[in-house]
Length: 350
Ligand code: NAI
Ligand code: MG
Image 1 (cartoon, rainbow, N blue to C red):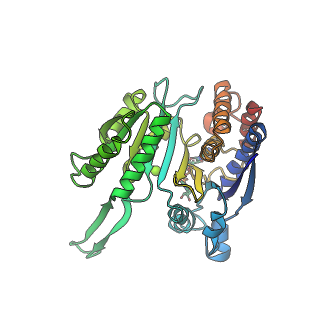
Image 2: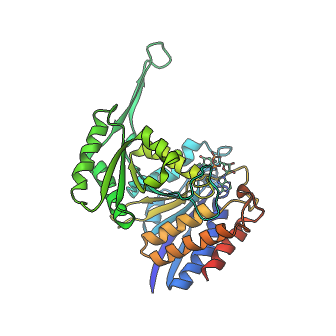
Image 3: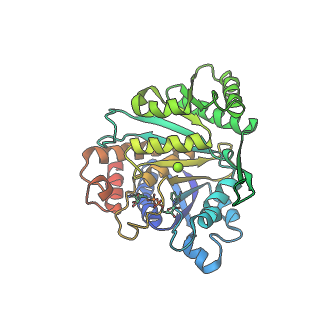
């Protein structure tokens, strides 16, 4: 029997509610598919910061390194700790320490869920570069506060960075429909994005079985809405991927469904799985948060750990629950609790 060590980081607000809910489902999947999950729970949060002056202990990264994967709820409680502090104290150091350069987000309309579009089917895997590009942080300001003030923010694209994210995209395309969309703005950004196009062409030679289409960011944003069925795997830079995944999340029915994986495909370090939503202070503590985004993230985690049958079964179980439509949290117009939705998904697994 295979065993996996999972670090749980519930974080703040609804984080612990959605993590607890996902454990009901994970345990059921483990039981049914014959693997074990050993959890270590790290209650690092904004409260930890108020108590100790740090979001996580000094050796936090080393503690996490012992696990095979990290499942995270949400981090942040702006009334207690400024977001910039909590984000830079916990989430970003983890992504950086383990070089989690892939941010993968499946955008799929589950059965019975009505998104804002008339689209019958919507199923796109967005792959966002997670470490460089427009969010590299390179830049500065001079003459601050004067009429001559200048602000410069430099995008950084490296061959290593662009090539590895594209390669991951091609690998995913091979597992899906063998269609890959590469997103740039190479008509306007003639250095970095032309470079991205060139690397796309070079990497594509290693994947002759995958067909590649290049889109400009503005055109593909429209295509997400108008012709989503023409897209399957979409690879984009940090900024473009950030924007596209919000569109994708909206079309799939909102934050209650949007799941994400922060992955280092080379292995040897834990990858991190988390819902896209935050700690939702407005509903925290009431047991009404939609757990599906976290359950979906947990399924992505299982898939990454090699438990693909368990992962697929969880997705199917979620779809059966949404298709029936009688157990829904208030954000979906229902009256069920977080735990009731998780229990319904777990029940579909047996
Ligand atoms: P949010 O995602 O926490 O909430 C936005 C709105 O969506 C709220 O009305 C909330 O009730 C609702 N919502 C979110 N998740 C839901 C769920 N599972 N079920 C039902 N309704 C849900 O974003 P907000 O309010 O901007 O941020 C709150 C805190 O979370 C901040 O500290 C922010 O920095 C942090 N945050 C953390 C993220 C992370 O850990 N990756 C991501 C986004 C925000
Ligand atoms: Mg975003």
